[in-house]
Picture 1 (tube, one colour):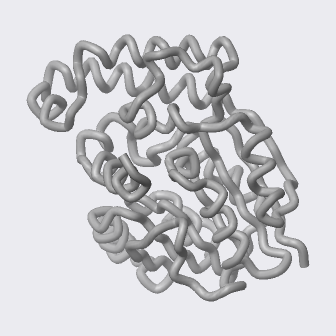
Picture 2 (cartoon, one colour; picture 1 turned 45 degrees about the horizontal axis):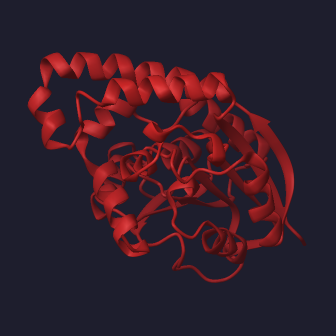
Amino acid sequence: MNHEELKACCADAYSNDIVAMLLGDSYHPGGTALTRRLADRLALAPGMRVLDVASGRGTTALLLADAYRVRVDGIDYAPAHTALAQGAAEAAGLADQAVFVTGDAEQLPYEDGTFDAVVCECALCTFPDKERAVVEFARVLKPGGRVGITDVTADTERLPPALHGLTARIACVADARPLEAYVDILSTAGLRPLTTERHDEAMTRMIDQIHARLNLLRITAPTRLADAGVDLDAAPAVLDAARTAVTEGVLGYALLTAVKAP
């Protein structure tokens, strides 16, 4: 499967309503509490312009627009997400502060030096060309601007077989990198790391939440799970493998911030 097919596959998967039911509103470990922590580390202030890459259904962007009074541009590969996010912005009375477009993180449709900050939550690990995406983050940042990432970390050489393959990639595991590798990717793009924090416990909580929701949906909506491609026989073993991997330090979750040289 080539890069474009991988992007389309991930976008289609995350556009499915059953995925929203399994993952919850934020689609990432730590939820809105970790998003607020990220925003605080970025020192967001009213009037700043922020780009949310892989903005999904708009949860992060709308939180930042509402709580921090910033102007947010959200970009996502899935047209369905763009439509849902824009509708949510209008329903929340935030359409003048949050605007969403469909596009590719590896080819951002913005001029150089447009944004005061760029955020990307639990998505860089799914991008086929992570280095190219981060170069784009740096390009659209103003000098002195900051980038903030929360993402899955993985010791790729120790990942068990159950956490390889396309399904695991879509689940943000198979192509995740060690924390140090993300730091290197940021540095190579000209972004000086400021903050690195481990939040592995958030990963464990999300695995437990998915397991509980899966058990409920197994009873209430088994056909919808099957239609979405969820293997009800294999899923529990995959979740157990992921939980064990977190306990053993193979999988985790991290927050990173970096600054573009002025």
